[in-house]
Length: 451
Ligand code: GDP
View 1 (cartoon, protein in one colour):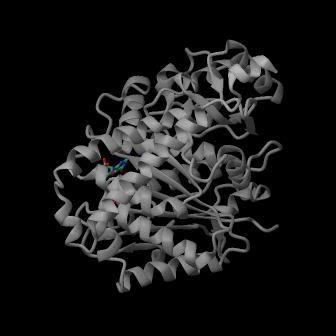
View 2 (cartoon, protein in one colour; view 1 turned 180 degrees about the vertical axis):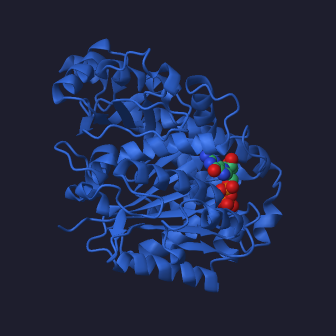
View 3 (cartoon, helix red, strand yellow; view 1 turned 30 degrees about the vertical axis):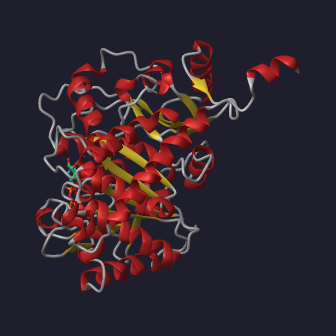
């Protein structure tokens, strides 16, 4: 069977650290040891996971991944970690000097004519060549870092030019929070990378560090969440998004299904992710984790990966990815309950948009994880016009600095022009407007009355 592979590329500190947690979780879920061997050979019957792991001739399962950073410390930690033997050494790529939190340095400074960039491009090419039928690229990065913003934008551009536009590119992007980072220029980096990668990204799932911090603190009861805690939660969400690609199932949703159902217009490609249940292990047995209960939870802003208000705005599409011991009837009833409650509104040009995925593989939870092991969970990916609030927050911060041209000289010094800042700002203003227009009713109520 051809496996329709996914290649995951982890870029910069945030991208690589998220990747570490995610691959450890994948190994746990598929019964793969720290050095890549199946714990039980019988598990081979379900080979769907081969789209994420390549099996070698000595039966080792190697992640179809690349870890890329412009400075060595994070990659060195992976090389020294318990999972060091899992990864192919040639897929852990680090250069010597970071991008100094500067989009321009990541985009122009390192990429052009650099042997490291060639090295990374070659590695991507090799990974693509060992696939039978590449289904898509998953790119993990931060908006705020120099590598995460600039280098990612350059790589996405290169991948698109080299491997045709037809292979979808999904990004998993850390949205900056001042509570967790001291990088002042993050709004610049975030806008510049979004603007530059707009045409090279098919779907972009945002992880707002502030929202994730609050889930860890308020729901998972972690007193002072660290990046490790945040990344573990992000991994659970990513694992739910990919479960139906990695495990066989009757109601699986593949990448094309996601895109077709979630992205009604190419520019509006930023789904909002929510996840339930988020509970510490000690609370799991005391909670009602019925399908209606977890379904209602994902409509609660407290379970969202980005801070915004979907119920005050309109849904364009909603993809519910269930996993665990759940029947289709449970799901139908739970969704009907949501529809009857009239808490949520859909745009009038797409009034019924629920896409359902159901996979019987329950989530896994490592013994030291903050998230308790549960028999069932749901991740909702919705396209909601309220996500524009995330852009409004960023553009507001961008404007305050750019009004004074503060820090702009650092970007000019690395080969950028000031006009690129204005172009990025205009593009994001247009995006906010696109969301507003999408929320407008197509049928004028006055005209409708006279018909
Ligand atoms: P880069 O290596 O130059 O891309 O820089 P970083 O990835 O460190 O980017 C800085 C941004 O990423 C800031 O907003 C940080 O708060 C965030 N960040 C850094 N490391 C992590 C991480 O491990 N997890 C998460 N969720 N965010 C991170």
